[in-house]
Amino acid sequence: MIFIRQQPRRVAAVVFLSAAALLLTACGEQRPVHSATTSTATPTPYVEPGAGDGAPHYRENNGSRIAGEMSPASAADAKKEADRIEPVLKALWQAGTWDPKTVRTALLKLGYQEKPNGPLVVRQMDARFVTDHYVTPEGAVVSLQVHDDACVIGFVQRSNYQAKATGPYPESGCFEPPFAH
Image: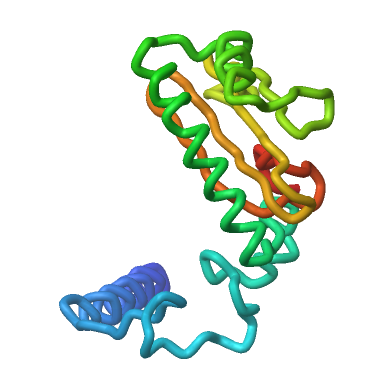
């Protein structure tokens, strides 16, 4: 009877030591890094081209967050408009005024027209989930439709500001969607 009780302990000890030996033999071993950004990496057959972080089905799962393509001429026009908007957002940020009404007034002085669906739309920032509830940060988001295939999106808030040219998003037009499906 004593022999039977000791055997499970021996088996457990052997299994534990074998697992530990396997883990320890890999310590310090350098392995090649496979990354979509590494020029020598070969992508797996399960990762689609342009898959951001390399996850399978990236484009399928994040399609609403991938901006559309811009023609070269539209991209150049959108860049010009972003370059006009960025100093205004910077000045508002430096002044500590980033509420939507003030941002809208400043951008209208550049000659833009605001309508409910464009070309210029200024609104409060999107709510974000923090810990256990949603919080709407102070600040404003901006979208400007330059052409059917080109937009400027931007924001100004307490911590920073930005204006950039981008193609429209499939489900949200010139506003970058807050999250994927």
